[in-house]
Amino acid sequence: MKNKNIYVKIPFHYGVHKFKIFKGHRWGALDHFLLQEISLQPYPIEELSLKSNLPQRLIIEIILPFMKLGWVELVELNSKYNFRITSKGRSVANREELPYEREPLESTRKFLIDPITAKCYRVNARNQNYQIYPTSRANELLKNKHSISTELKIKNPKHSPFTSDILNCVEDTDEEVIGYEERANDRPYYQNRTFAIAQVDEADNITGVPSDISKELAADIIAAANMKRSEINTNIDSLSKNSKISTYNTESFENRFEEHYINETEFRIISGSDRHRDHLIAMIDKSVSRIIIHSTFIHLKNFESIFQKLTDAAKRGVQVDILWGQEEPDDERSIGSYNQFLEGLKSYREEIIKLGLTSLFTIHSDPTGSHAKVIVCDTMEFGYCSTIGSCNWLASGFNRYECSVFVTNDTLTTEVLDILSIISKGKSRVSNNLSKSISAISYELKKACEHLSSEDSANKNVRIKIITKNEHHDFVLDARDKATKSIFIASHRISNNAERPILTPLITSMTANSSLNINMYYSSLSGGINSQQLDDMSNSLRKNGITLEKKKDPISHAKILSWDNDNILITSLNWLSASAYGNPYDELGIFIERKDIFSLISPNY
Image (cartoon, rainbow, N blue to C red):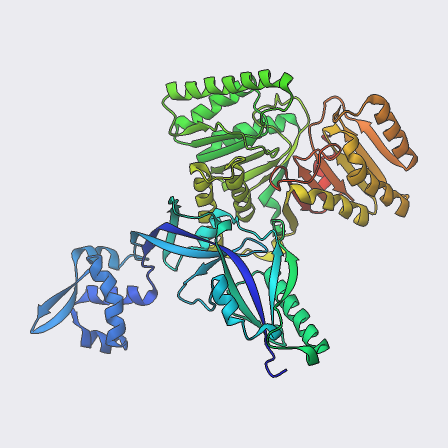
């Protein structure tokens, strides 16, 4: 085979928007030096070039922005044109840093969406190293290369990136993207399709795609090329130029978040009912400009005292957003009480109107359908911070045991914000003002993270990861395979759903290691399981060396998986009753690995 490269045709969905951008000139040391020099005396360009040892063309490029800002003017002195400082320029020339001037603009920009991971790639960037083609053009380019070409066929290709990732990908240097205008003629991303043609050499080097392509998509491109190369080597005598282009089948990844290593000071476990009440009040009282609370349920009576705290926060200028997950029930007998609940929320909204706080305090009207329990706010001490766990913050009477994780690490909080930006769209998944504003916060926080110097990794000994709904049972399997001493599970509810995904792996653990200490706790029955069935389940587990007990005094609403004292997953998912399949953001948890982490919980449970 003369041509050692294999061509891989890759489908992408894409988006096009008119973005609102602040563009400004970020000054460097050379800019500052020239302005300071001109502040000492006027200079003709020839003298300034000699003194600075810079070419005249470069000096003009540096000084033109100064002139636009009114810091430098061009005047005739002694029959020569001189650059002279203005009073405005003199006022900034000797500062430690030159002020950053920003100019608003609008720009239509296009981005590709990674079909495997939903990562975004800018199209038509200054340093773009790839081309994209409509279907007809891509097919034409590969027309005479079928024998050395293949195409990725992707099951469920991604087309819904986080908005904060879109904003980040389309920005240029010296830009801040504020948002984008949704125009009537902007097509949904899933309706936009284009192709890139990658070339893969025998050393698995890839060209013709974005330079920062995701490792997941890169792996599929290489696998497709290697399969085609193997096919060529096997059938070299039967190849023809007109052979049909082959395909490589793959599928997209579910959105899962990376694990991080953080400092022990960047998280805190909240354990117990009183501590949850105190934490909620502290977050409201300490919020500086923003607090967002997502609670599966809102209990109208229990919400009264919290509502007063939230109105106090709004009165001091904090933007308050309340989201809730409970959808209209299928059971007709429950619809009446649900409608009463909606009327109760309406009365709270009317109170907000009377107080004149409608621009600051919003109880959103559409349920999200999510069972996650989340707080995000900004405080003077921590900046933006987040809380994830078991507590229905706006329904709880704080009389049951709860367990949550409070996180101050910026990277983790951006991930929580990205999740909230999706949840806040509700079941329609259509962008709204809240989802856009949350994405904007995440975008700004991500930019801040990029500019912060990284802390010594030796101090970061806590492994932590945000867990979405469909990942939960993977951790049960981890406990089954890795536990050597103990496994602990706490669930508010228990039902027959627990048998296959939870109980079967645990029984397998005991078979492999009979010295394991496995304890499971629940507080109430659900899903139609009756007392006799529960007794049968408990007796069967006991024969396998597993303890199943009812947690009373206080009742537990916590959802916890832990093994060997060093690993813990605190979540909103009821381990012993709920399904762990469906929308990834319907349940949220945080996994933490740290020595003796379970000891922070066990005394209170």
